Image (cartoon, rainbow, N blue to C red; front, side, top):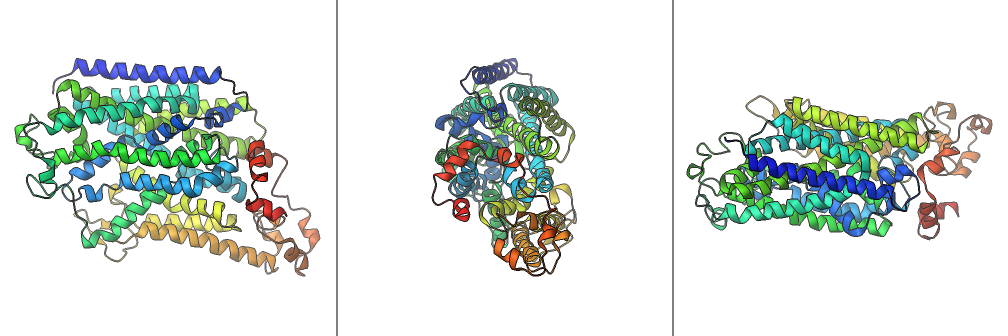
Length: 579
């Protein structure tokens, strides 16, 4: 393949434009009227991200390189087709569910990161445990899409993969470091425009190529491969449902999503942002679906790509850049390359900022340095942005199974964090003991189900499982959703059991070593009258127990605006409890 100087110049100009917008957004932040906590300025944009910019940045966060490349691949693969392209509908429904049920309680309470409610209710140690799967998800996702970007650029302009990955990561890390969420949000607007324009310009040229058969015909008829509409076989129905629920519900508990929710100026705005982003995700998936259908409708023997086709060469994951390279004029394929680059950077910067935000606030500040100054936390964030960006780049260059690691970590987000989020927001009375048991139980069930992508053999063969050519168990049973439900039930059951045992005096209060039940009796989990009437509990034993809420915790988790919002809301459960 020849080296394309024009393509290199085009990508350099694109990167310079993105860098300029990121630096301009950082400058605008420093010169704005916002004079509050600089930590909030970096993490949640001072909570004044506008409706239009917010909708763009939330859409761009989901519409990443994996989204557009993966959708095209799913449509192209003959065993799957459009029926298995679940990401567009799954993520759109995820944003709708998140907007209707999760955005308002999170934003109205004034949280700064997704982990805040976990540490408020379950304590800092449990928050640290939940940080692990959240961090894994963000880091492996960033590494996976950076790896995909390198491969895409190498296909179209034939430059070294490592160089393209490093340069892309450096630019995304730099403007994230200097501008925080403001830079990420404003570059997302430009990047989303580039994705939309670049892919839609490419589609008509690819469709008119002489080697491409009418996609309406190939949708239902066998021409070069199975129809691209696809079919869901009876044996795969439960597996399809499992994957769909993972996308729809597992797409909610991500810091990248809640960072946008918490940056909105009000809870209502946060809900509107989610609904607008759901529509944006569906709209942005259309050109990827068409490109996948074009790939399935192409006689590759009539192109410079030749035979065997991409499916035979195991290059289905590269079908989008292959279509751009071999079915479009060179100058058009460069627009498509800009679209892919924009998609990757719009997701990579969000993941890096999300990981650094959770570490600086929930691990460094709340767990180790509660009295840290504002500027100290800001500098910790800047250092971790660089560290996490470098780590994601290293994984993209060195790890051979980065996609497999991301699949596993995203499963853990669904199985562990989602049920915990349900409990802290909607189930009154859960505590740290239940949280730990739910965490461990869900983790065990997921790992025991195996991961074929990592050649991790299953310990449990669920109904319908079979072995592949590598003697690795493939599960048809929806064991991921089962694991999530088991984690959810375990959390509630153990929480209420432990609460009952302490309340009735069957277990002495001195054994509440996590301070998760007795120390919280005055507000969240236990009734004061029950505690006093119990003959088995001596009040003097309660005196040495450190109260759950210290002087610093209320100011740490709740700002004045959130308190005023809640005070003015008669339906707030917390207000009713105080009455």
